[in-house]
Image 1: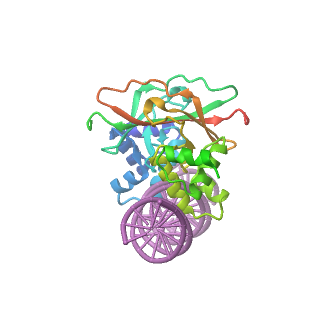
Image 2: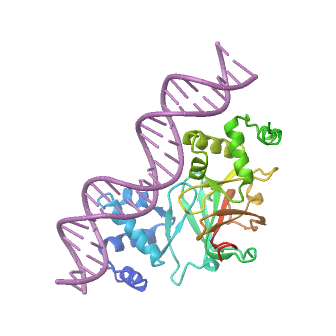
Image 3: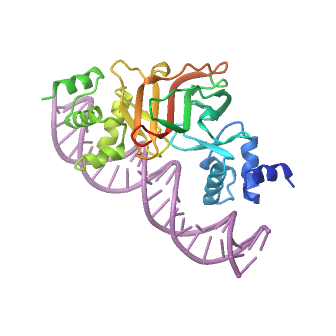
Length: 136
Length: 136
DNA sequence: GTTCTTGCAAAATATTTGCAAGACG
DNA sequence: CGTCTTGCAAATATTTTGCAAGAAC
């Protein structure tokens, strides 16, 4: 019934179960990153553990990336189609202290940083906190 | 008995109690950021709540800054003397996936990023995860 | 039937607050 | 005395695991 969503899951080698399709659809429709708790509230008939494992599966297979925005609850947002979550592909995240939402600013790429000798970058987390355009 | 440490606290308008002096000394001697749990293990005779509030007091008064390194436990590290924790003063943090330590790379400043229209930056959190020089 | 997925329960970890006792000026 | 700090207890929040039942292939 939703060939696009199933295809997206299969492209990341994730079996398209109904729960996963539901969560993926929500992530696609959302303009901000969502937490496990957000999903639990949204799908209040669903089990939290299932939602947790859904997100973990998505993350493991690089369908989503996690964002530690400093609020104490990790957020998840869809990766771009060809994303492999490499440091040079990562982008800026913005957390609004007023509306409490966290956004991916995909257009703002991670600036090139040269680390000291022998430091090797694997993943990055770049978050700016402040006021978003709607709240400022 | 430790005029330097007391002065440091007073400069940030923090009453120099013995507990605070102890924690400050530990932070000064450490070459990496510490978590509440680290302090609890280190000062096993001290109460966790007191350590927690000590760190919060330090943070509120900008003696330390917190780092969300993605491990699930927040780390704290000393600010530089004149630091006001403004975005343009912030530096890079590095978390080593092998030795599990988180470092301030004070010499690597936060790169200048121009946010979209009407976004206002207040604080930043920039963490790169990977292998540090000793573990690579 | 074998593997993958889900639901329920519960554990593990981290953070935060209330309140009364104590220290300090 | 009054304010700030500390210690103990307990609440809250978040993440994670175990295990058995169910669905999918």
